[in-house]
Image 1 (cartoon, rainbow, N blue to C red):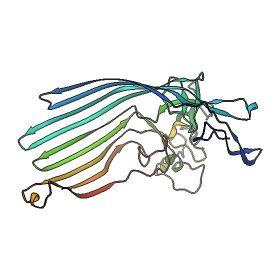
Image 2 (cartoon, rainbow, N blue to C red; image 1 turned 45 degrees about the horizontal axis):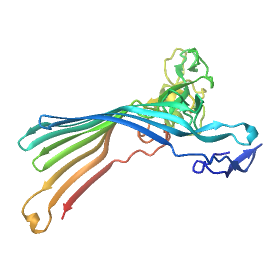
Image 3 (tube, rainbow, N blue to C red; image 1 turned 120 degrees about the vertical axis):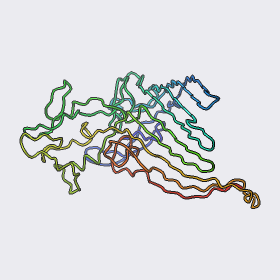
Image 4 (cartoon, rainbow, N blue to C red; image 1 turned 60 degrees about the vertical axis):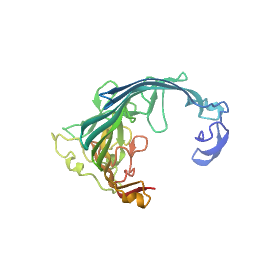
Length: 347
């Protein structure tokens, strides 16, 4: 049965299956559910140097969220599998740094550089007496680890002698796949992220470029798994990486022989870094000036052209490191590249 994501406080009915027969059954409702609570501490420092030509802001934050919704297992004698209660506690703390500086300022020319970076450390502090559980999306929720931690069997490569896929067990020994040898990997939430903008201005002409980036997250590339799955078949197109598939004893490769299952969603073979640097926006603009604007009652006019999501630098092999579903890359539509030409008028 289902807890009913939107109505966990109320007893209701949901889809169920028993002995192969589908139907509906009561779902558990907890009328004692309360709002989650958050306590935040912030301390910051603002600096202005060289008559505010360089401005620096540093902020430390510590945010603890309590009364989190977590599932607890119920005795099957109750007729329900689990219930949702307010019992979890999680902490986010870190440092945010922002800089705004006129690097060059000579006559009509100015180069301004502005950027920010956030270092965030997430930890689960309490699970209401539990030490861990596996969430609905397959990630591990464990006290002391970041939220949304991947929980997988560690991939060990390919045996050059026979082309078999190799995996680590919990003791660190290499052998065949064991579904019980799950270990935590990185979270799919970035631990460091930020952005920076370069703006070059000469008189009424301006060129700006805004970059954003993220680092420290891991993404599970399901698209890559399907494109390297020969044993599963399905008639789909395969990746060009399959040209390196194991065929000969002694061959060193990272693609096992044709009959080896990929163990979809359960191993670190398709876990990749989600780090990226993206040219989010680049704009060239010109401010139109002249007394004739006043005669037609226009106070400001600007003509511009811009491009969004023009370039992305990443080692991730999926479509887009930002376009994933809870850290899973499975045919998620990438962000669009957009070109715009416009005229801004202020009357």
